[in-house]
Length: 302
Image (cartoon, rainbow, N blue to C red; front, side):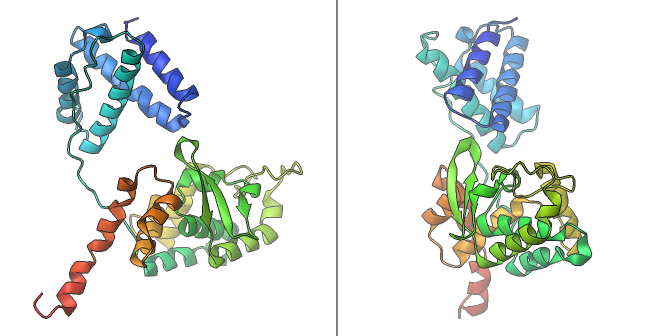
């Protein structure tokens, strides 16, 4: 066992208990720290106190050059490394923090894939009686994802009591256990109502009389898992004649269409549950790209 192992365990425990990170985020931290440990041991460094800024810089270059990671992934690794050494510094185990001088690589702004409103309509309408016995559930799922900008993991986790039909709002539990209240439009409310009245009683085989039950259920009456959401979206996209569609594109489309319609950036940030508005700003670039065609078609000197 190297001298890295115990500090890594302590940091991960602190992140789980004190920071309240999700299991998926903790898994990413674990992978990043184990990558760091493996690389440092290969360089003959067995103690975090012996790590220098140059060692960390070489590690990040290794991730890019030998592992082929993109700048966005390397930035995440660096964030993990900074957290690790800040913890050790605060615990008086280091005289100097070797991660302090490091700066993140330039993050390329990769524009997210977005469907047009017409494509979105085709996808929603693909969930029809001809698409299978569970079409009402599938339609309710798609409508909620597009109406509230939900992630695949979020839509499957919705519980009955978190959907307030009378108020037209949905309580969403996002990353890092952050909660947000998102309005739900009439089409989504209609789809959910039809699903709950006609199909949900048939699927809800494990009803215990409480409202803690999941809203969207599988054919066996179990909660709808994230992988099932992906499969449903891909299947319906193929039925609609749409290519390369995945669940997160509904979230991207939700944000882009709101901004295109004049919604305030801060409001969209709140509905998406982004901690940093810089994350939301990517959607302004998506919409701005459409301005070029407007100028080309309407400006007297394009």
